[in-house]
Image (cartoon, rainbow, N blue to C red; front, side, top):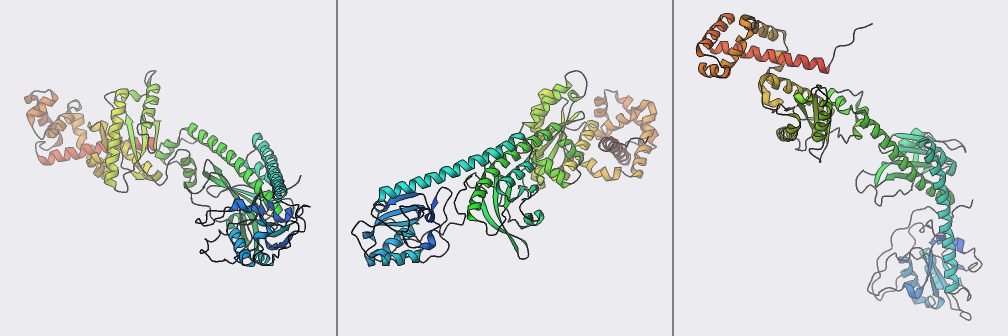
Length: 608
């Protein structure tokens, strides 16, 4: 199959501004390589092979690689005298009569003006009998690096423009046909579903280049070596790649992939030429496709062909990456255990956490508050408890559309992880968590009943903060049920228990609570504990405590005397009341933390 004859070098810099009025500008000296031919343009040297233009070059041989896509007469290139010239003639061959270049004092100005507008070539048409001297124009064209052709009389504008149009159209059609073949070949590989490594091998077969495919995080997804000669070390190639552009709205300007040529220093004194093409899907970078050329510098013809392969390959690789991401996301969400793994800290390493977090839009560096929802309606009793649990979980998930909210039913509770956006201030974060807890209680009360309770821990950073917040929220939930706290409360609302948490874990504290409460629980059926608690709760008001318990005042006095004898101290004294209060709180905290520890770290199975 014929190959596209185009170059792949970098375009020349933009032209300079307009010359002062009345001055005859000199032709600018070339400052770099001539603008290369685009894929749908024909190099000037290719046009010179045509019989109509053969042997017509008189100057500007250094610019024969300039691309021509159209031809215009000089009369149609005139601009408003007051407007500065711009690069509006890029890829255009200007057909002009030799009379426009004959005056020596005007030739340099005409050439300079067209060069500033990046004209690809100057086609000077010489009518029969015209023998004007073009030496001044030739010198200006040589200095500017723009080809100057002196055409015979039969090469008028109609004949030349038809020739240029036919050649450019044939070139564009050839590139389009070749691109279609490449796309069909790679699409067949994609349709069979063997994955990205098979796509890499297919690109090697089309280009005879070694191929490296990386994802957006720089992880290697595939490497395929060329069968022609020794292949480079993939690790060295990957290490030599330039840093990808920053992710964001400006990372990909037009939403498409464009191959960029780069030189990779893979070892001291060893440089490889590569085409680096971003893999883009919907304007979002998914990774990069790297094609390592066999020669450095590569042949321009091969480079043009490889650009077509790279850009079509990057598009189809992006489709495969998107498909695989969708499959992994669906599998991850179907597992449904991400929230449970978060609250229990069950990740093997940060890499596993990061890989799974991407599918749930969980920012591993964000701050989160954990809320626990509990109600009798969530207990596994009856036929409708599962439906109620699913409905309540969905309600909690959609309560705040903005921001990250993760929900899951764990045991007989619903866990809600909500990202806080109040900034680094802990007080503002806790206030935001408390407001969300109130909204959550109002939204779920109609579904789960009046005994609904919502507790939350203190907000924390990342997965570690989620695990700590869940432990605090569960501890607050257990304490709330034992102490008849408010339906919505946080760990900070139970400051007394929070302050005693470390003390309650000691053996001395547990012994103190047991020795203090055991006599009351053994005496008189165990109701003395509740009587003493009501007496302390009403600040020692005997009548108020009797009314709260529905008991006669004298009976209340008798019970308090029994409690004093069991405690071996007067319960009416402040010291006795404090001892009882402290022992009761330690006992409650020990009971709740013990059951929570059994749940979050169950005992190992007995060995067989």
